[in-house]
Length: 183
Image: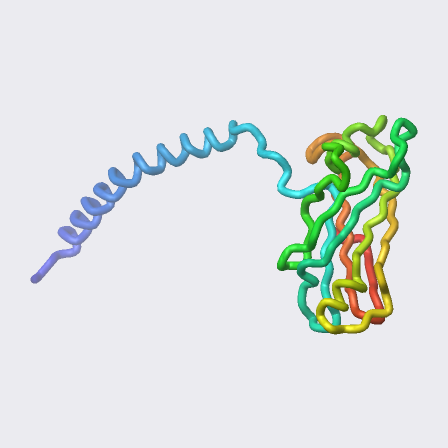
């Protein structure tokens, strides 16, 4: 088949025109969809403002199914007992959300939101139940528990003034541990 350059150019333009006609409605509808997405109401936080991550340095793997307790140490004067939350690390060794340890329905974001100023400071403790966790694996541990105390400065919800995320990573072994302020 002998096509001259002029004929080839004409056919190419025709094909492009057909493609453009087919794609134009799709592009317009996706622009409308992205406008809907942009105006959608925000979803609840996928993680609490305080999270942790534990890696088992003995095996080089995440410390899955490790019981953890988060406690507010600087208890508001109106409360008699410490406010505590519990969790168990997931398969990746992480705690993203905490469950109230008592029947109170307070959440970590609610506690921080109730603080008087955007630069309020609270003192917290995160305790890892290391001894029973290693014992269940047939490993002797020097630590019955590992507790990390830290200060949280800020309040509120994500996106509001004073909000900050605090991540407490722990590298954990039966004879040692290390921690730092994560991001």
